[in-house]
Length: 410
Image (tube, rainbow, N blue to C red; front, side, top):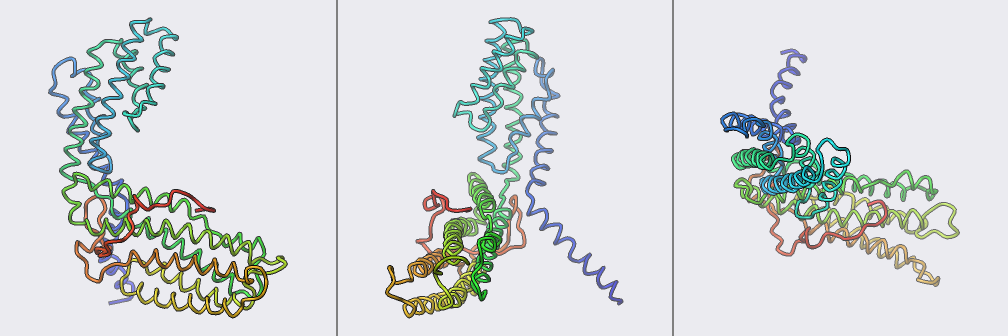
């Protein structure tokens, strides 16, 4: 077989796996399929309804689309909120019609103004924006008639019920996007630490511009990670398929919470060094005596960050990192002087920060043997990743221990 033929064969063999991975990483595709199915069913059912509902069949698929969200619990909540918002908006449109003419600009202005004010009603949640739309529809299309409000809300509710049913039959579990978001944060933090170590390995300290080029903006990836993990966590409720991935979801929660806290520490570490170990300072925080040991310590911390999620590698890397931390601490003690603070205040702060990072990262190590499906799941389907329970009973809970402050660019 020629090399070209072998390449083509390998491509064909691996293509199904690549397609599946792409599907798992993008749950929006599955969401579109569920939405299309629910909308078509709602439209079909609406054709058999008696008048006056038969005059407005398009509201049924609209409700179905609203109900097909990324989580089963979310679809129920948002469906009820939408129907409530339509009811509130319909009442506003009804009131506007009886206060003036529907063709009057002043009536339209009043109805829209009241509808926008209704958006602030907390019980309506994220779906409150339907209130001004429903108010305007009731006024202009329904002529302020009470039956229109009932038909509008009723058909949306019917479509939503069909959408919720479709979600219940094919429950979404967006686990793979959450895993990818956590991995992105892990890689970004490792890259930041690699740049810091590289800066410390230079013969001469960097200037302000050099440090600025090595500072990463972790905030967007942290925000995405928190949202993706929360979506996966919300998808558990009422989801018959979530039990199979319970251990992986718990592990992902703990890992995201730890990485979130480590991100704050890494940004603090980078900011500290960029100010204290900068060319042009009268005195350097570390200097030639401590910079090599500090670089070695940061390199080992980088290795721990990269290996989080692998029980074999992380234990080995943590041991090496702690030994490196001890060497740096010993070097700091030897470099102590008679200056205020012993001349090593920054070095001590750096050591404490690294130790806290290690404590956080070791808390999310994975048990050797998986207790659930050792594969990714996106939208409720198994994928190609690894999953295993974390047996630590005292592991941090992200909803309890997540930091409530920010620092630097994190």
